[in-house]
Image (cartoon, rainbow, N blue to C red; front, top):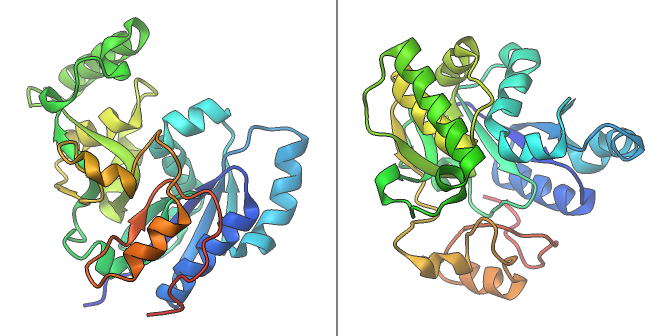
Length: 265
């Protein structure tokens, strides 16, 4: 039975880059629905982007987040839940792929995520929290550490949690519809960051997780192709990888249009 996939495309600027990346998604995944989430804070800039983006970027729908830019960056999962409650629950799909504007996928989704079962969350660099550097901001800085403690307390008090916490990074994730339904019903609190909250609630709600494999903490060489917070991936690096039969096909961050990309399946 075919898996029905949708894309939830998150962006806040660079509509021409967004258009190029959305075009790529459509060429490689014919017939796929692409629903936009605009994360620009309220104001004149948001109004201009909203008026131009649905047509310019080529989206099937456009949802505007009501939150600040910082909230949208830190809590992509909660913004996707807002979208799901208001838009996504009315759509038919099995798996939702969350694609940020600077995530470039040059391979069909069913191939890029072939090893991720449709009933499993796809999280990137999913590891036990004990394997993460102790100076990671979200567990070491006083305010962030306090919020993480509160989130764990919430998990223990409400769900009786006594498991091993995990962490991930927020790029390239995918959610089964069943998880989004359960996650929305759980109404997770805005505490800490999605990179701790998503794997925690997968455990709490009994949903399996599969690592996307796009990035690994013990393989710094992958930073040339995929990183969060690092320098943009150079177009020459992308085209060189695409020329290799076994080269990388998923890149982040890509902040400009790249020539010579695949034209279809």
